[in-house]
Image (cartoon, rainbow, N blue to C red; front, side, top):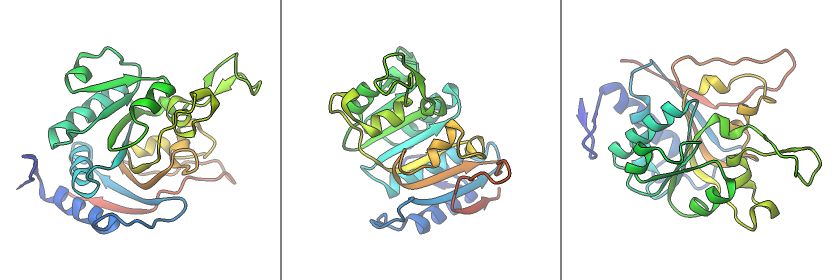
Length: 235
């Protein structure tokens, strides 16, 4: 094991993965990336410490950056917040979920909301780590929708898009997006969770996909999400 500057002991495979992330990102992070954003996938077994690896890499390679961390459940979101704080992320954090009065998040100094206006106000500019569940990507019913469709964008996408409905508030794009349990987003690009792959909807310079079970699921002839290069981590 190797002791990281945060006090977290990284195992050999975590150190190797972090080094590959550094090579992918560049150091300091590259200022020029493809229009769709730079993408890579870390494939590592369950329990191998992918969350800590990503948190340490983000702390070292994106200091003072704007970071988005996606989780498939609220419980995993809270666990991710705890891990990122433990690693040494001391800056502002916001959670896009329904836990607005959660004691754990409050103790960690993390405000939670599903309101895109609040989200854009709290995390609009500057350094921040935003934690969001994939449910925040799903469109919401709204009978007052001015377009007449009766639906509006999910809070994360709405905050990034801005517009009149947000009274001039808008959240700036991200430097890094960490897509945990990335296999959950695989498949048909029309699925709500697949929005995380679309750089026009969820803009980010770098996307780091994390999974223990990589897969691509799609109907014949359908578009499939692009996840870039892939690395396997061995314990």
